[in-house]
Length: 171
Image: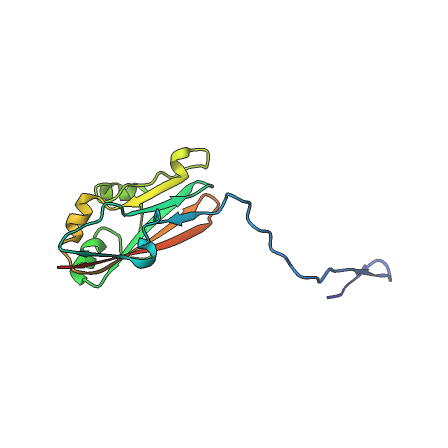
């Protein structure tokens, strides 16, 4: 790339050198990336299969959000259309799903814990664990099929990360 500037009040052209070397992106600062894990259970990789209401009690999707939580969305898709219609009425099936950090999610607090949004200086706003309550297992247990929970967390700097938890229920 070559840039030449000619000034209107002078008959002089000045060349501006441009560095056309490779552009190296700046890596993120250590410790500021969002991390999502399943606490070593393998559930995010392998999913969960539940037979005869033998619900696991160790389902936990842990989100470490060093820059502070802005939003945590949960979206549910299901092969069981009756269940999908039920959770659709709760706002859990459209777009990104329901923002659990919003006041709209307060009615869902009996199904799973709700996160606290806030600055990275608030210890409660930098970590959230999505887990399944007994009430949610009881509700889900009535509907055979594959149920997919897509979780998306957005931090205060608008970085995001997602994870998918698949739960298959059979009788």
